[in-house]
Length: 207
Image (cartoon, rainbow, N blue to C red; front, top):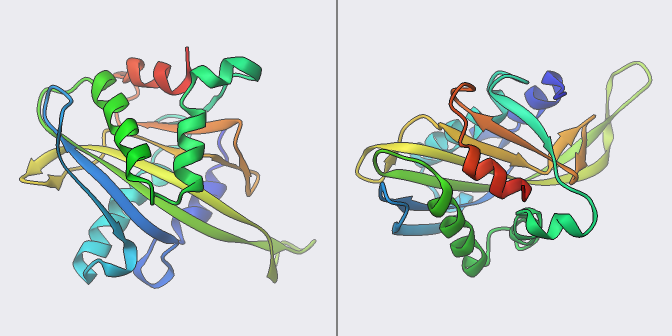
């Protein structure tokens, strides 16, 4: 089960004044899942308006209804993990979105498995959160326990030319569990829990 407080703690670092993101990359896809343009940019190079739009897009994933829209899934253990997207997502995170070849593979996999009736966008955010330590009285302390590096993916229908609407699918990787990184888990977002992108979820988990 996902702890709602953990997700709220993350979203508080997704504002223009407390931005935790370093880069954002993405692709625009047609309804058949083929690329129609890509981008990859440092967050600091975005305009004020673009920064705000991107933060709202990313924040949708952790701020969604916990354990309803956003659910925790476990990656397989051992050799079976190689069949999941864990190796690819780990490599993308380690590269901090700076390896376009890895991202191209990711977009292709999503395009092959995502069901859409029209064009859509795939936005991937790389963030880093210096998790502050809590004292025994639950007060925040100045030093940190760890640095949580993570990816957020948001898949959205296009509402205009190269303009994403509200995300319908996405994920947070690795999961943020008990205020710490847990790479055995991924939190997957579905705007409509009754209409899951089962092909994509199965591909992510290697099922």
